[in-house]
Length: 181
Image 1: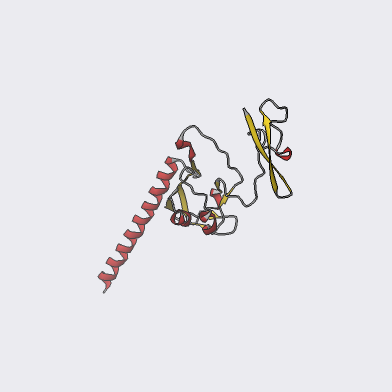
Image 2: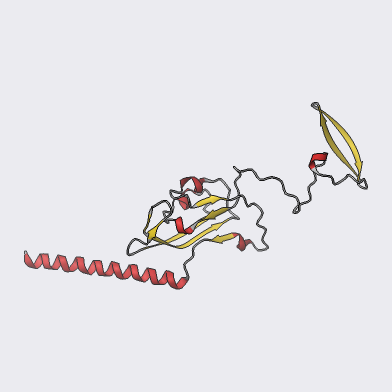
C-alpha cells in the first residue's frame, strides 16, 4: 500500500510516493503529510469560529428572542412571570421572569450564531469547544435552567395567587364604584 503526497514547491505540485512502512509516513503537518494524531494532536481553533453554545443563565432575562430567531427551533424556553423583580443581570438589566426551562438541542443547531447576536444581555455565547462526543442523541440537548420541578410549580402557584388577588381587588373596586354611583 502506498501513499501519494503532494509537495508544493514554487507553485508547482510534485507527487512523491511514500510506502506505508516508511519511517516518516506519519510525520507532522510541517513535514508535509496530511495526517494528525487525533485526539493527541489538535488543529488550532480560530477565535471567530462557531462552535458549541453556552448560556450564562444568571444573565438571561428570558426575553425569548433567541428562540424566535432560531431558524431550526433548537432553543426551547419556558418562562414564569415573577410576582416582583427577582434581581439584575451583570449588565444591570432587571429580571422579571424565571427560566423554568432553557434547553438547546445541539443536534439541530446550525451554528449560525443568530441567537448570540439578538441576545440583549449577551448571555448566549459560542465557545471554542467543538468536540462533545456523546453516545445517545438525547445527550445533545443541553439544559441551562437551574430550577427544580418543585420550584417551578411553587413559582407558578405564587403568580396565579397574585393574579387572583388582583382580580378580586379589581372586582371589589368595581362593586364599590357601582354601589357609590
